[in-house]
Length: 454
Ligand code: PHE
Image (cartoon, rainbow, N blue to C red):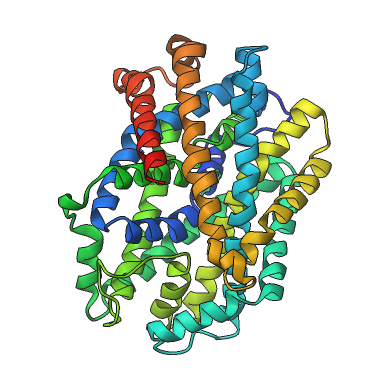
C-alpha cells in the first residue's frame, strides 16, 4: 500500500505519526509555561474551567477547519487560501499566519532558551535540596539577566529548529515526536503525584480547581479562548500546514479530538504540579500573588528539590521539556518555511536558515527584557510581544480561518473533505453551528472587549 500521495513535497509516515506530530506541535511551553501563568493572572480555577469549554467548543472547531483546509489544498496557508479563492484578499490572512509564526518563534525561542539553560542547571545539580521560593527566584533572576547566557541558549534553540526543519517531514519532525512525547507525559504524571503529596498542597489545589464564579468576566474569557488557540497551535496555520502532509485515508475528526485531549491533559497536569508546589511557600498567598513569565521556572526546581531522586527526575524533565518545546518551535518555523518552499520555490534549507535568522533578530529585545537591558524590562517587551502575537495575532487568525471556511469555501465543501477517512461525523451539526456562528461571534465580541480594555 502506498501511503504517500505527494511524496515529493513530503508526507507523514502513518496516521499515528500525524497525531503525534500534531500533538507535539500543540504540547509545548503553551501548556507548561504559559498555561499556569494565565491561570495565575486570571483568577485561578475560573480560568481553568473557561479554558476547557473554550477548547471543546471553539478550539476543536477551528482545529478541524484548519485540518480540512490544509489537507484539501496540500499547501501552506498563503497557498491554501489562494488555491480555494484565487486572486482574492483572503491570501492576506495566510500572510498574517506566516508573520505571526515568525513573531511567536522570536520570543518563544527565548523562553525555550531558558529551558536549555535549566537543562544544564539540572545536570550540574543546581537544584539543591529543599529550595525555598526565594532561592528559586534568585536562580531565575540571575540566569535571565545574563545576556550572554540567554543569547547562547536562544541560539541553541534556533539552530536546532532550523536543522530539523531542513531535514523535512518524515526524517525530521515525525521521528522526534513519536517516542518522546509519551515519555514526557509519563514524567509529568510522576511530578504531579509528588506535588500533590507535598504538605500543604491543598491550598494550591483549591486555588487551581475550585472556581470562584464571581471572578468571571470578559477578560478571563478572552484570555481563556486565546490560550486555547495558542496551546492547540490553532490560528496561525500550523495545523493547516501539518495537515497538508496528510493522506485522504486519515480521520480528521478523531485526530483533532485526540490532539485536543492530550494537549489539555498536559496543561492540566502542569497546573497540578505548579500550584500545590507554589502555595507550600507560606509567603505566597493565593489571589494576591502576581504570576509572571518566571512562574514555571521557579516552581519546577522547587518540586524537584523536594523529592527523592529529584536530580534524575530533574534531568529527565528538562530533557523532555526541551523535546516538547522543539516539536513546537518546529511547527512555528514550518509555516513560513512551507510558504517560501511552496510559493517562492526556495529550498527547505535556505528557507529555514533565513527565517531562523530573522526570528533571532526579532527576538533580541525579548532576550534582553528580563534584566539585560533596563529599558526593555521597563517596557515589558516579552509580555507585549506575547499579547500582540498570541492574544491578537492568533485570535484574529482563528477568526479569519472560521470565516473563510464558513463563508468563502463553504461548509458543504469542507464536510466533503472531512468525510474522507471518516464516514460518520457524529457531532456534525454542532460543528457546523460552532464554525458558522459560535466561533466568529465569540471572537469578535472578545476582540472588541479587549481592545477597549488595553
Ligand atoms: N502550541 C504550542 C505550545 O503550546 C505553541 C504553538 C502555537 C506552536 C502556534 C505552533 C503554532 O507551546
